[in-house]
Amino acid sequence: MHALISGASVAGPVLAYWLCRHGWRVTVVEKAADMRAGDGGHAVDLFGPAVDVVERMGLLDRVTAARTANDTITLFRPGRKPITLATADVAAGISGRHVEIMRGTLAGILYEATRDDVDYRFGTVIERIDGTTALLSGGATIEADLVVGADGLHSGVRALTFGPERDHRRFLGAYLAVYTLPDVLGAGPTVAAFTAPGLAATVYPTLTAGSSRALFLVRTAEEFENRGPELLADLVGDRLGPRVGAVLEHAAAARDFYLDDISQIRMDSWSRGAVTLVGDAGYGPGPAVGGGTSLAAAGAFVLADELREVTVGEIPQALQRYGERLAGPVRHSRDVGPKVLDAIVPRSPAQIWATAQVMRLLPRLPAPVRRRLTSFGGGATKMLDGLELG
Ligand SMILES: Cc1cc2nc3c(=O)[nH]c(=O)nc-3n(C[C@H](O)[C@H](O)[C@H](O)COP(=O)(O)OP(=O)(O)OC[C@H]3O[C@@H](n4cnc5c(N)ncnc54)[C@H](O)[C@@H]3O)c2cc1C
Image (cartoon, rainbow, N blue to C red; front, side, top):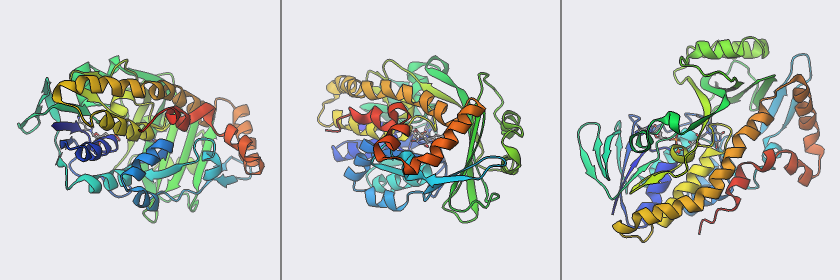
């Protein structure tokens, strides 16, 4: 049996790995010209069952060794003493099992683990799908038994099979921006955090000495077409103070500047015939706020599990079972993003004050109270709680 997967980031390689283990032949097409290994992209989180998936792939030691070292977070407020606490205390309520790693690093590890068994084609996209026959950019045709879109929020397979993105996306009323810049804050090995009503920024060191990465979350009811650094500058203004002003000055020069709306992908069903979606492509819970990496890894594992011993004719039923097993976690995941946004992008000065008090108290509170305060109303692990990996 032959699977054609679009997308080689998290869900794609995890699915490819397990399908190969179950005896499938796998081709992966990826839009990017090459593997974005190294510490590129942004930090992502593996929680609970997603850590189990990586462990079952025999990769937990490598993933843990490559994790980010953002062990403390420091909240800076104008005219006030900074407050520092351990990120483990903040993550305590989300999951007992948690690894933070740069997405590019994780993708690189997953690629290395699969490259000998999988036919990877970089700089390639699917241009047309007819049943399970796909026309690739460059002119090749692949006749697969299964076509999978693991190609993220702006999925090409979704657009070709289920119609335009606007029919499946729900805007959560916020934007996010990420880019790499020199270590202008000199804040050391800590995540420097800044907030103002409707705004949150963090700046953290990358694994490359002298370089750091900035992440901005901005609440706005309005949607924008033009998403360049000037939009970020307009949205943030000088509301986060001069230190963040210095960070913003580097946005225009950043080669990896990224600005996008925070939207969820909401579909009643993400399979049609023998075409399906996995990860952000089918059920993205909202970038940076929804635990999408864990859902992508766990979803890919479950999909492969359902395809373990099927014949070609049984694939649609297997995809239906995959949808049923993921329905609960996906439904739950839709509550996570708005709750996390509420918690980390304060709406008022009073909320900023309250957050600072919680940060100050957190290390001194008993573990159960600490966990409850940092669980974001159930959070990313809870959404995967009911998921049986089998
Ligand atoms: C700025 C930012 C911050 C984030 N922070 C966090 C976080 O803190 N914690 C967390 O858990 N998650 C976070 N996320 C979300 C996380 O990155 C995703 O949930 C996760 O990467 C989903 O994995 P995926 O494999 O489904 O899709 P993606 O990682 O989006 O991968 C899709 C892949 O498909 C490729 N592709 C795209 N279009 C095509 C096409 N037409 N044809 C072929 N290939 C294509 C892309 O190049 C990419 O390699 C963040 C996301 C962003 C953008």
